[in-house]
Length: 456
Image (cartoon, rainbow, N blue to C red):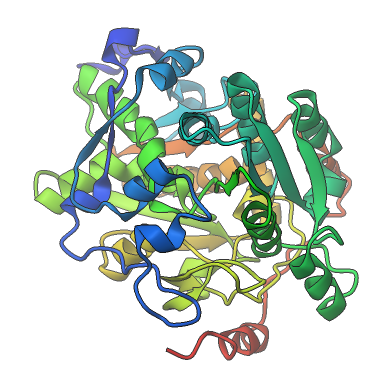
């Protein structure tokens, strides 16, 4: 097929929307390491997790053999309000860069929450409702997950308690207000509402918080409040499962026009977007059916993959959650208050960590000012103001396209545009005013954090 035959936006029909989530772990020869009890170091069982997570979600979390999970009809009905999401051919960007590369991006910002997070939020809220719970607790970084969950809980009539990383709570008041519009209570974390919050504040007075801190508070609130469970927007296997709709739709759209990707790029914080985008492509790679170059992009200020240790670590700063084997900077690491709040997590999904350790994907880190330069360029050329998280993938997609310009190679690049940046204007203001800085942790800072990793 010629370039002219491929539309600017590739839409799937409702009938072509995925009817089942794909469980990438089923095709992994080396399975992700199991969660461990933080006290005994024994493998966590469904019974151990029952007081924290919803029952059906626990089954999904622990299942690494079932390749597909049927999507319940009520969730499919909700998905149809904003899915299938478009796969866009970036013709304007290609022309501006004068590159022979063909660039596509999967746009996940076409819903009120503004990001891909709604794909898992509605699933987790559905299972909580099915279990007869009163409500759920969670954490949020940039606020995208909290916004999505508040929407999902409102849809099913559930209470929603959100602990928002303090720096984002202050930088992104409008996203906070969207959560409240949908009925959620929003608390800046760390707070004095929980015992773990009080402890963190005592040890780190004036801290701007981290996702690890907020997770600790949300978990404590869930286990001490009758009728509540904790839900998480990234990192967990169940979340990557739900987010597989991104990759399944992307693959279906490419196949519809006979296009094969060469390079697939996604921003990486905890792994929800990246894991969802790459799932069917990585599945083909694992089965030996096709090969792809897969690149995870993370902030230089929080470089879990590129500078972290592959080890068992706590998923939260308060050290109350299970131990997960992952690429980590240490649960006590509190990253600089950069503007990509959704990427400020100290660790990475155990599934993605295993794939990375097996050499099946690569990773790179980029500085904040470079990211916003790419975001601004993209907005001016393609007409979408990207979220700071998404702009990490944009930056590397542009870099790869320019390499093609140098070599003359006509590679096909696909990246995930996770959401819009209309609630991130404080960050854009800092960039435009020349007040944005590039903080990169020193080896000494990271080593201090590594020294506190659990002794296994």
